[in-house]
Amino acid sequence: MKKSTLTLVAAVLACLTSPARAQSPALPPIAIVDCHLVTNTYYIFGRSDVPYVVIRGLSIAFVVRDQRSVSEVHFRANYRGEEATITDVGSFASGVKVVHQYDQFVNFAYLGIHPNVCRAIFARFADGTTWTAPVARRQASS
Image (tube, rainbow, N blue to C red; front, side, top):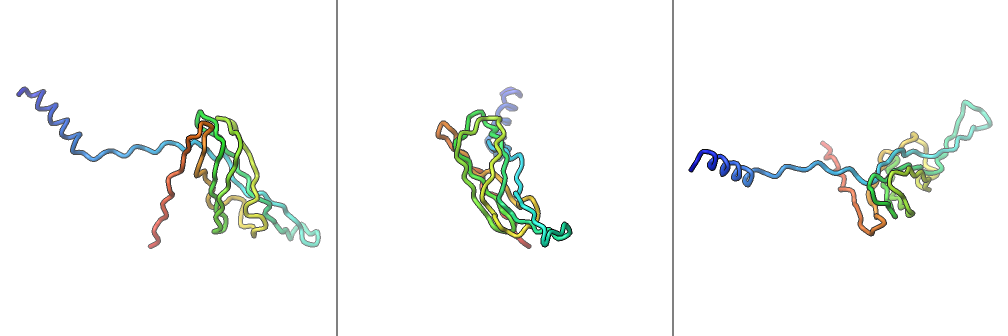
């Protein structure tokens, strides 16, 4: 055999026996632009030095990254250890910013404007196909 043939055979065998390389995950089709709690601030006895903040809901701004429009989106949010799954149904065009307010975490004690977790977990495209986020791994406590 010629040297070039041996090199080719060795390269093919190396490819067949080497472990497959992990592909980088594709970007989710839904990008969250903003996620924050909507609040009302009241002042006890009218004193500006004694504010009382009440949560009125959760605002999520998102954009469809995919070229296809989306008819349904599910979000997962966590605030103060309470988890909520939010479903939004509509016609969401690609590249258009959508801002909606949801009735999650209403009247919770205020511990900051942003939830601990806010992410898209599911999308149904107008053509009927779906996308589901990979399951988030929980870190083991040591």
